[in-house]
Image (cartoon, rainbow, N blue to C red):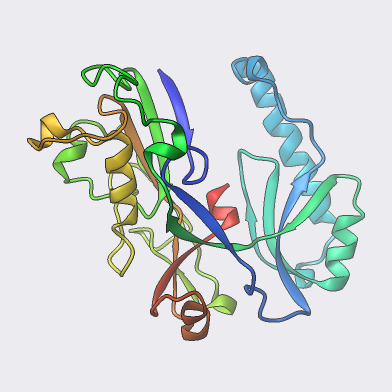
Amino acid sequence: MKFLYVSMLFLLLLSFLPVTNVIADIQTQRVIIEMNVIPMTATERRNEKIANEYKKKLLNSKQQVLAKLTASKYKYLKVLKYTRYMSMQVDQGTLKQISADPNVKSVHVDSLKVASLLESAPLVGAISADLCDSNTCGAGQTIAILDTGIDSAHPFFAGKILGEACFSTTFATFESQSVCPNRQPEQFGPGAGVSCNIEGCDHGTHVAGIAVGNGNRAEVGFSGIAPEANVIPIQVFSRFDDNDRCESLGLSSPCLLAYTSDIL
């Protein structure tokens, strides 16, 4: 099975637009820490032994960084298990300490993103009428949609959902709450990628429909770009109840924003 992992910026329709005013307290910052570990090659990822050794190396590198910090030096630790990253809230002194650690390659602000529908087919070059045979386009492919989840009962997606996941954050400092069905930071399995229930939660369904919607199954006269592809909906947004933050972005409160660490 071939998997084509899609973010709103990378393949379809959308971009995660950065929100620049996310740090309320200049004395502390929520950051993403990139470990100084060389990524595996495509060939290495297919070797189970090498992949397992790589995971151990990643974990050891993260543990070495954390071992040098006391619990009072950081808040809200999220270790992104399968990547070179972890995120936390730190003060300026701890930020300097982490940045100087030889196990750390770089440190980035864990910025917030807002979903924005820009272009669809033109963005991915799917503007030619003979781009592909509509009866087979996308066959054998699976597209992961990182967005607000989808309406899994929509006939566009009948028999097409191969897996689901949710990554969403409850963080009191920013007045954000997880919208995963289990209200935890992450969830996997049936129902995990369902759309939430506040304004803007239908965004992911729209995106997925343009990507893989099958008009024949839905008995409508139009389909998405790859109607024979399957889909994995991944919900990556969180609910924000901060009126000032939402209104500054032209959104009503509560609003949906995505932490970069949840997208990763």
